[in-house]
Structures are given as C-alpha cells and as structure tokens.
Length: 224
Image (tube, rainbow, N blue to C red; front, side):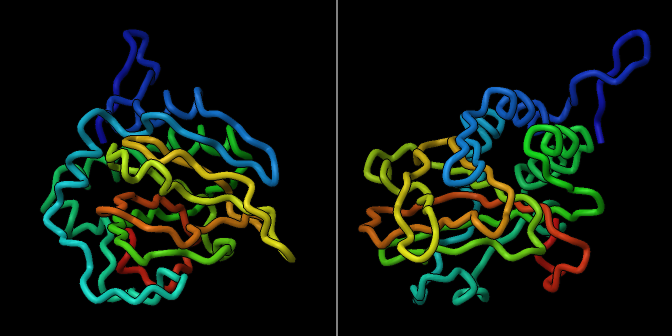
C-alpha cells in the first residue's frame, strides 16, 4: 500500500487518494446527536470516483422483489470483491483507502467505534422505482456503516437514507441529503433506526455501502 513519508522518516498523510479524501471529509463531517450519533458527509470519495463507480458495467437488477429488505435480492448484489478489484481500478482504489490503518484509527477516534480485527465489506447498490427499506438497525456483526451516494440527478434529491426515532412509532426525524459524493455514517447499535421510506424513484438510486464487520461474517465471499 502506498505511503508518504516526511523527510524525518515519519509517516504523513496517506498517499492513497481514497484515504486522503475520506480523512479530510471526516474532519469536516457534520455530527448530529439525535436520535443517535450520525455524521453527514461531503466528498468522502476522491474526485472522479463516484462517476467511475456509477459507470461500472453492472446493470440494475431486473425483476427485483421489494420487500423492505435488501437480502430479498441477495443473488443480484454486487460487492468490491478481490475479483472486482482486479477487474476495476476504482474498486481497488476505494478498498485500498479504507484498508489503510490510519483511516480505521481516525474512524475510531471520531466515532468511538471499535474496529479491531474487523474486515472490510463494500457493496454497490442500484435501487430502482419500488425500492424501499423498512426501519431497521444493522446487525451486530456490523461495526461501522457508511453510505455514499453517487449521482447528482435532481430527480433523486429526496432519495437519501431516512433516520427514525425508533419504536413504537418510528417517527421520521430527517433524511441524509442525496447528491453526488454526499453520505452518512453511523455506528450500528440498538437505537440506530434507519431505512428508505416508500417513494417514487425516477432513475436509478446509486450508492455504495461501506461496512467494517466482525471476522465471523457469514458470507465471506462478499468481503474486500
């Protein structure tokens, strides 16, 4: 993994573009504390990465079933696997950035997450009209969740992830702004209720989901 050194031999800013972009973004992130801690992001990925990911040769899934859960369509989901990193430079670059130990350390310091021993999982999502996600909390084996949106289409401006107060009423608190290279971070917990309320999606709602997960992640083939 490329590194940069000052003349005194001390490591300085990571040279991987994805690491540089994310570290700068995290420092400037807007931290919200209600109904749980989450961070709103601007430019977490390097210039050009969103377009490169959105241009990957994976068509939106056909015949998807919209049940309010992503796992309903597991057979058509796309990940930044070692194979896809070999095929597509942008996948390799993004994985390289989020594998950088300085990125993990910065996340832990900023959010209080414990990422020790965790593994990286990145999913490329293409959601079409009819898609929705019921309010849910991420499973315990996920130690970090980041969503990054990939398009600037004004018709998708209201398609960001929804934040909820939780049971019993699941009051809608707000939504992350959807736009190119905008995003959302939270550390999965018992109160981190989120989803995508049913709404008309005109076009394709493209995003990536970045997770650090525990080593006992069941579907190891999904990992970076």
